[in-house]
Image (cartoon, rainbow, N blue to C red):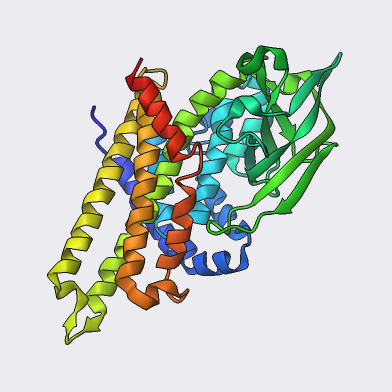
Length: 381
């Protein structure tokens, strides 16, 4: 499959790289230290149209491909994974409206998302339902003019900052996976309760919190798609959003490798630069190979989903990409810390932050163990 980067995409990548280096990199350590959502970076993202990349032009976005979205996420993640994740998590919500939104819903909800004036959150995970989506408890009880939502959600990205929430809930539990539906919840809805912000190992600038719904009424026009379509829609959304997480992982890995190359060029030990030791040259070479493999798999998967997101290979390819890229990020960042020695373990250098940030990419959007199940099921059909 042809996934060559166009001149326009390469120009965009270079532009994003400059913005990230100038605006996001200087703030990355402070954001991590303070565990604060970077509203200033969110504003920069919105001003540059980076929160509406996959949103159609008629609804305030730029209507670009999943591959273009991945390029943007990757470049930002090279210097600040927390900021990159704003784009990735927000784009999942945008994609939900693109796939299932009616024109009126897109006009009301998608436009502010595409323009970047509102942040989106996708509320699926629950205390006892992570990868096992069928075990969720949140329910939507039908009334004459809408639904009443009751339940709780766990580890929701943008749980505090989101103005628009797409919620996964049971509209009919007796139908199991065919009873799941998607609902649009405005950020100021009565009965929506935002829990404490989580203190995390990594990705500390990302706003993660619990959400509770206590008799939260939503009108019937807030159902996204048809009742009972939720499971199929979630699976389609995950195929694309896993590539966003893979792009974060590739960016983190590339950023850690950049740091390792620069450090070993400058660090003197035993009268020589570290980079002059063949053993360390091989470590860097292994890094370069694995980052390039992960990137190539990512771009191929993005091109495939841009061509036909309903193609039979998409679930397997998406799962493989996220799994391999995240494992690569964890390996590369760990190797980078090792190359830095004791300096890699302290916060004066960014590689320890990158290692902490990399870990979550192995857990997001289905753990890598679950993704192995996805791949094996596809192979054994």
